[in-house]
Image (tube, rainbow, N blue to C red; front, side, top):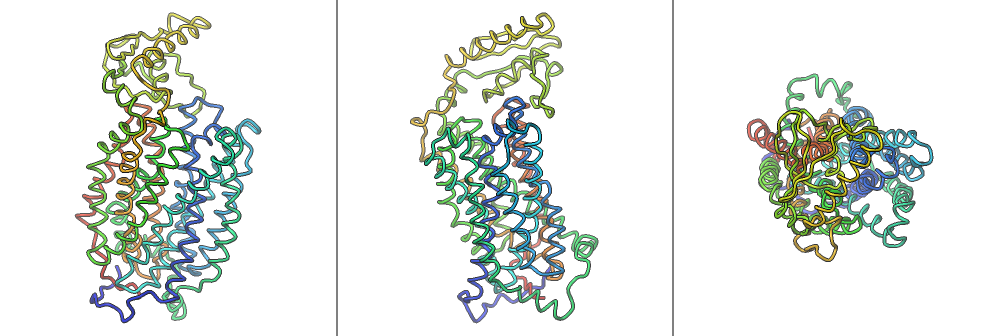
Amino acid sequence: MATAYDGALPKHHEATGTEKRVILASSLGTVFEWYDFYLYGLLATIISAQFFSGVNETTGFIFALAAFAAGFAVRPFGALVFGRLGDLVGRKYTFLVTMGLMGFATFTVGVLPSYASIGVAAPIMLVLLRLVQGLALGGEYGGAATYVAEHAPNNKRGLYTSFIQTTATLGLFAALLVVIGTRTMIGEEAFKEWGWRVPFLISAVLLGVSMWIRLQLQESPVFQKMKEEGTNSKAPISEAFGNWKNGRFALVALLGAVAGQAVVWYTGQFYALFFLEKILMVDGATTNILIATALAIGTPFFVFFGWLSDRIGRKKIILAGCALAAATYFPAFHLLTEAANPALAHAQANAPVSVIVNDADCSVQFDPIGKNKFDAKSCDIAKSFLAKGAVSYSKVEAQAGSIAQVKIGAQTFTAPDPVKVTGEARKAAITAFQEEVKAALVAAGYPAKADPAAIDTPVVIAVLTWLVLLVTMVYGPIAALLVELFPTRIRYTAMSLPYHIGNGWFGGFLPTTAFAMVAATGDIYYGLWYPIAVCVLTVVVGLMFLPETFRCNIDE
């Protein structure tokens, strides 16, 4: 870890012109990369229909989320490749390369043929482009954070790097504005058909502007001095992770800070969005506006918590955010349901749905091949219909071999027995069963979609803003903490890997994992156990092993 300093203020209390340019240029470039990366997340439902239309609806959406997560899966590898390059060659030129790769992949998604046009080649090409984006982003963040931190005075590192922390949210916010604007201008039907491509194509203009801005920067003075003295690392990967002292800090940083930060980030800004649109059935345009409003309110707090971490420390703010997330996620998402779709909340309370089955007779409601129609077992027939309609249900254990039943309030419906009916008779029996259950759900008040007029907008925005505030607590100070944990000669590599394992794997796979958990159990809130468990792990490991770093001198 870097050496401590005495805490005294430097002579200049205000940022110099050079420091302001560094913050502005690094931040604007990073905003563009996050804009690129998160367009896909915002449009996951539409992309599911465009590129995964060959499978059932539930599986298609999980596939779309999995393709979203594919970009995160390779981020640690991008961190190793570009982190090593950044420690060997320099910070500036490395993140110029990553930006070019990101821009190319994003623009290409905008011109990619759909499944209807070229079949299975479409989703394969989409996933490949997501992998390129993930590799590029794996090298981008560490470079930007390190570059800004190495220009910052010791006592303002949290404040300066917090502007980099705003870029992910600002990139998402910019993507939301472009998506909302396009939807408004051309209409929802046209947007779903072809208009969703426009935000991807616009990225070409943003790429040109961002590249020009980045080209104006000079190399980090700390790195330049180290290179002139010949003290830079010749093997940053082995030095960073083959050395137990540095490797231990990387492991502690991952489990004691970044893992929790990652799941809070993706729960607050992406799972909440998917939950509103897919589970609570709020229309896409309204969901985008609600999320954008919460982001606009919450984004300044990235800078606030970065500033605060310069005064009271990074560790306590990050761990407090994780603890608050674990304690409040269930009540927050229950309140979100009541405010965004009150008819659904009322129906769930007054006419709860249960499936009476034996576990041995059920399949997991996820089909990785995309060919299972879930009609070979009575349990599957019942659960797949409810999952497709995003109906939350509980499971009641029955005797082995029992035919599955769906209970809605006081009414009970018996699913067809596929053993006794085959061919067209089975198809007719399934259709009749589904119609009966659907009619009972409607009679019990279960809505087909959220009523825009019934949405309690102030409460929804308040809940979403709370989720964003938790994000700002854990994310605002994280860059400064990671930079301070490692020496200059291996900083780019050493900080990038735990950051991208945490955000790429723990966080990036959160929407896919959580929705698969919901599909498997029937409980719309069950997916929250994933981020809660990771937050608890981070609090425990962080309290026991994570050092406080905010009084470190990183110029050595």
